[in-house]
Length: 356
Ligand SMILES: Nc1ncnc2c1ncn2[C@@H]1O[C@H](COP(=O)(O)OP(=O)(O)OP(=O)(O)O)[C@@H](O)[C@H]1O
Ligand code: SF4
Ligand SMILES: [Mg+2]
Image (tube, rainbow, N blue to C red):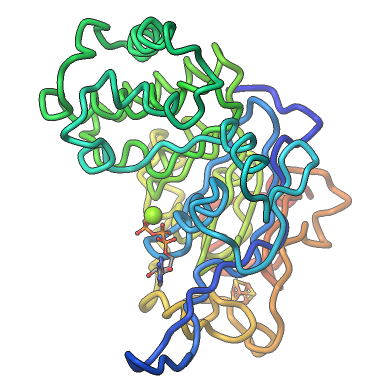
């Protein structure tokens, strides 16, 4: 894990992505919108890893796609090294895109089956010819394959001749070709066997140290995210519920959603595990086309009260913890984050978590 630098390399402010819902074929009428991402803010420092976790459909991939300009945000700002890149186009956009690369979830569908591995890894040089002189590309591709732990002599083979883990290594090599500063990895290990997941995560950690990369690492598996992340953002229905360091989030969660998610994860420490009661998540995730008023989590929250339906909770450090500076003093989007409740006692967040 990397030390966190002071200056953010990437700043995301109030990011919104709505997909219009329409009716009719010839005369399309807009009937509403899927609010996939609805006001998300975070920062990423050079060389650090920010993990984003959340259930399926909460908007993780949509955030990823807007960051690498595969989609245009509906509103909000994305800054790269202080420069607003939200609405860049043409050459200026191309220059920025070199520095922010993406690694995709599914190594089976994200690699063109008709291209050789060498051509796949070297493809970014076709789009950015200025990044490597033509005569040098073959050598670079071999080097990239070596860096990710593949035999450079495999450059002439096709994706189907590789295992899932090897294919993800190919995807990572392609992501590294332009020597980016940021890699947005959208569930890079979710499609892999558990034993292979660890190898790929270890590879990503090694590459991070070697090339000073910053990662936005998206996953629904909380254990994988904890392993690799310096900081973690928990997402629910298009918004962030809680953000903090891995210790703050995993040992001292204050948002009921985070607590419910974590209660379902087995703990390596059996003594602590015994103190953690399972908090069931009631009901289904509501549709992002019709999110609940106020707090989006309220339809599934055991702490919900009348205020939760009225007021949207801001992502902020709870007042009661602010002065303590303890591990509970991290941003949480809950009106009652500092109030004890029954699951809290069962859960064993403990007095240290309250900064008391
Ligand atoms: N192009 C699109 N048009 C309409 N709705 C979309 C589109 N892309 C995504 N959505 C919707 O936006 C919401 C967020 O989707 P997204 O793929 O970002 O979620 P996710 O957190 O990545 O989920 P998963 O864990 O399953 O990958 C979902 O309700 C999804 O159906
Ligand atoms: S604001 Fe209310 S509904 Fe939302 S998480 Fe907090 S207590 Fe639950
Ligand atoms: Mg996704």
